[in-house]
Amino acid sequence: MFTKNPRASSARGKNPKNVQKEAVRKSRKMRSMIYSTYIHRVLKQVHGDSGISRNAMSIMNSFMNDMFVKIAGEASKLARYNKKPTISSREIQTAVRLLLPGELAKHAISEGTKAVSKYTSSKSIEA
View 1 (cartoon, one colour):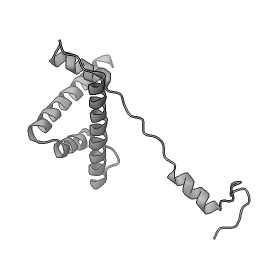
View 2 (view 1 turned 90 degrees about the vertical axis):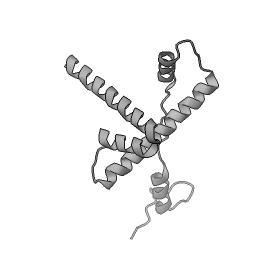
View 3 (view 1 turned 180 degrees about the horizontal axis):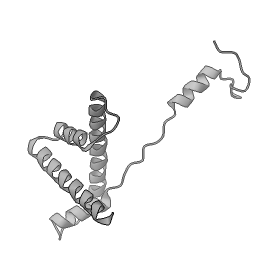
View 4 (view 1 turned 135 degrees about the vertical axis):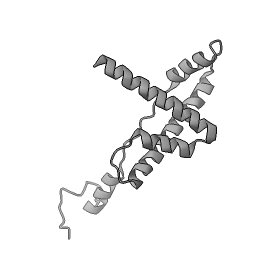
């Protein structure tokens, strides 16, 4: 069992078991990404003459963060089910298929595949 250690307990009189539990419960605050510049770029590509209000941008940013968390969580579950330590593009694609409805999922996957191939081709040119 545990022996009493005067250094382990704090000045407030907590026993070592409670101190350990507090350390386990403490977690880092998740850093949320700000997508406003990317949303603005896409808006200008689609509707060049349109703008977006600050409130609408905040809503879109929250939506993007929410979708990121959902897709990453689903991809993580899929990787765990298949006993794989890493999330690959296949897990991301399957997560998108599960989360987005029909035609929207097809468009998202095709755009994602196009973006990844563009990225890998630009990396091979630089190297």
